[in-house]
Length: 269
Image (cartoon, rainbow, N blue to C red):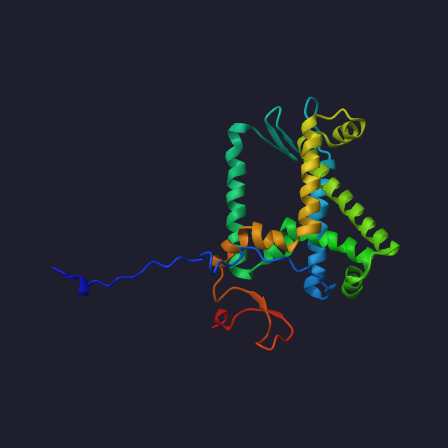
């Protein structure tokens, strides 16, 4: 039998106790990104234009399906339980097609992340795309980085008030257009647009537009990187998909010289 002298005793330690507790959330330090240039930035502008164009314009595309069928190219008809995608019509019992596409999209996202790193976060994530769009408005009104810092730290003048008000009004217009574009996927877009302005649309349409307007304005204009830091689960997931053969982005050395994209040497060995 073992006596007490042969038993190792470990006293429990309280982590993050009241005496040494660290805050879970850091105070936000406002970031003033400078306008970037180069081939990767040009490619990002192209991706941004394509993704925003697809989102805003797709509900307005027409597709002739003959009589007694909607002519909207992409339509999720919840009332009649139909999903129309150009020449494809999916019924509820055929939803496994959609499930299969979602699985393929997920696998594709995992594959892209493991090979080229944070391509999703940097180019096609909705948060990234809309923050970029909001920054375009901010730069157009307030100027580039140095001008925005000077304006932000300066006193409130008539000019500053006009610039800030103009920026936020345009942000709200973009946010409202974003919410409106979403509901157009669930009903005939021209008809629903007229009903929205005449006050005859269903209450759920106004509620949806209001919620999406508020969230788009808050996430894209006010929170920005905070959404990625505290709300998005993808950074935690993608960390498990990267290895020594993944394409990464970072400084060339510890002296923080200009950053670059490169394939690790192990890829070619």
